[in-house]
Structures are given as structure tokens and as C-alpha cells.
Amino acid sequence: MTLQPAYNCLLGCFYNELTIRHGLRFPLEKWLLRPDYFQVIHCVVHGYSKLSGPHPGDLIEQFQQEFPVIRTVVPEFRDVKQAVNYARDYTGKHGFIAAAHNLKHAPFETTTYDSDSWNYLLLTEFTEKGDCRVYSPYNNEYAMVSAEQLEFMLDTAFNYRQAGKFTPYMYWECEDTQSIQNAMDRLDELELYRSAVQNYPLEFNLHEGRIYTDSLKVMREHIPPEQIRMQVNEIHAFHRILLRSRQDLLGFLRGMGIDAGKEIEALANKWTRFTHLVALAILRNSAGEYERLYPQFEELIRDEERLLKRLPDRFAAASPQSNLGKSGGDNDVHHRS
Image (cartoon, rainbow, N blue to C red):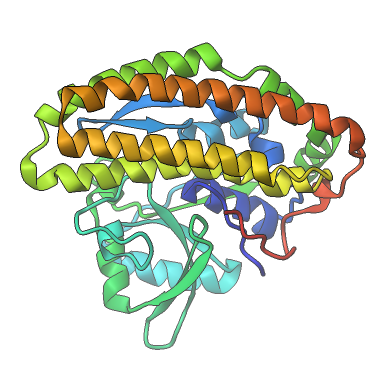
């Protein structure tokens, strides 16, 4: 069993369920590559502005609407100890289970503050003394956590979000995998990418970026001094997911014979520069720094659209036949950064 990485932890958990537990075989991008793949959305998280892509929960729901044979299961538990015992039995039978957790107590992306909203990893196996081996699809890493640490990770506010019931896990049942596989096999990777970039949401992204950059100065006025660094770190984390979603296209493009490394690297540098400018604006809290943000964002988004739309011209030399439809499941892990 080789677990697969993804630019978002929850998407990675869902994809591993489909490809490993249920045996479907298709690259992650074959599911996700739609025009909204490149959406940049202003959102408010715990009262503070963030820049995000489409919510992973929404993307999973869209896939389930297309394929109603997939059903989400969120089991309820009396307490954390009952939940851990359940995970021990479940992973023994099925190999892994997706668990929402608090990054403050996690071995990956550790924070100094509580951060538990939609953060998922996979519990994969337990030792006799109760330690658990966990896998992060976002980091593409494994780690061992003690029984005590696991309880701290799971016993967090987000896991009581459903009327106070303790619901740390999520998994997906699938009644008819063949219908999904047939539908995915009919999709053409080249045409998916062409359609996604030709329908790049330029005006939408610029509009959302304007709201985001305009809101940062107002947001800064309401951040307690002791939380400024925390908010900068949170902003970085959201920007990194957007950046990873672009970088992860490299493997998909290579599968069609296209080496877009230089182009994607140039795009990554632009995203990194914008992220640094946002951090500087918040830390320095000067009008001039805030005024620079939207022009930089607009330049970034227009450059991104041009770059992504140029790449299909290079596809003319690439064979439309690829083996990407065979990926997933027990194939080797490809590092996606």
C-alpha cells in the first residue's frame, strides 16, 4: 500500500480512499482539473481574511453529486478513548482512516496555537502499546505518535462540531466503482487541461483579490499584538496551498510529455513574492505597504493566466495517449513539490 500525496490534506484523504481502499485508478488532477481549479477566493476564517482555493469539502461534494454511489460516513463516539479503539480495529481491517486533528499537537505543520479546522491526516497502524503511525498527504510524510499525543490531537473543538457529538473520523463507502472508473477513463487529460486554462477565472480572481487586499489593513487593526505572528503564519499556510496546487501540475503535465518546470517555477516565485509582501504589510502596518498589494496581486494573476494558457500550445507536440488513467492505487509515490 503506497499512500499518495496531495496539495490539500482532505483531498488527499479522499483520493487515497478512492484509489487504494476502493481500487479506482486515475490521477488526482483528472478529478480536480476544472475551471474552478484556478479560483482564488477571499474567505474569512475565525474573523480574519484569508486567500484560498475552492473548499475541499465542496470539491468532494461535487464529485459525490456526479457519482451518488459514493457516501460519506462520519461515525460518532462517546469519547476519545472509544474513538481510538475504533481506529485501531478499522485500520487493522482497511489500512487507514482519515482523522481531523489539532496542528498544535501534530507531528507535521506544528503550530504554537490551536488550529483544528479541516486539518486531516491518515491513521495507518497501531503498535501493541498504542502508538500510531500517521501519514500526512500534504507533507507526504509518515510519523509515529504516542497514544497520549494521539488523544490530544483528536480531542479538539472541531471534532465536536456536530451538535457536540465526538466525530473525529471520516471515510467513504462506494457501491459501484466500475461506473466511476468507466467515466474517468472516458476523460481526456489534454482536453481537461485545455478547458480549465481557457476558462481561467480572471475577472473572478481579480475581484476576490481586490476584496482580500483591501481587507488586510482593516483586519490588521483588530489583531491583538500577541497574535500578529500567528495570523502571518496562517496567511502563509493558505498561500502555500494555492502555490502547491499550481506546482502539483508538474507531474500531471510530465505524464503528457510536457516539461513545464521553468514556467511553473517562475509562477511559484511570483506567488512567493506576493506572500512575502502580504507578510511585510501586516508586520510593518504602513499605508504604503498595503497600497502595493493589489497591483502586485493583479500582476501575479494576469501573469498566471498568460502562462497557463500558453502551455496548451506546446501540447501539439505531445502524444494524446498517456498512461495517466492507470495511476493511483499501488503506484509509486511521486513527490509533488
